[in-house]
Length: 189
Image (cartoon, rainbow, N blue to C red):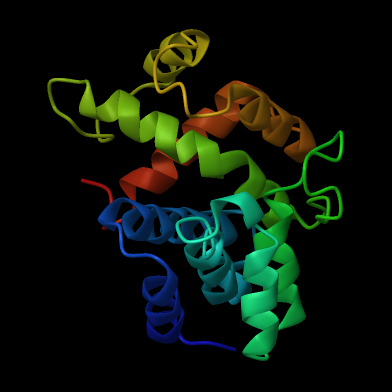
């Protein structure tokens, strides 16, 4: 298994944009928080690596997202659990353009699926606040912007909703827990 620094170096090999690098660090931190809070503390390092590497191929290969990353990781002999978990966040119920991506089944995969888009939405809501912080952000503020499809239009609300369903959670719980996870991250300003 990769160390965090080795995984981050791999992410930097395929991503140059600070936005993508920061997103990977944030999602990694959020997954670590969820591992620790959902009873998977012994797997927290693994969950964090999955979050860090989930968009490994996105910047360089956007049309092959979640497909190319599997090739890259297999060429490097990485753990199949890591490969499957990172690819599962690209799953589409209707098959999508990459119909062979695995459905999120493990709780960690379902969390990744749910929080990937949500972290972006929460971050966008936070920077619009006077504090520009998640520290004082409330669920109701996120829900208000969630309903406004023009706000942070790139954040897919259907995926967030489907992610909550896959977890068996109400949307409010998912938002609340993700805000708490983002507050714990050193990569969220």
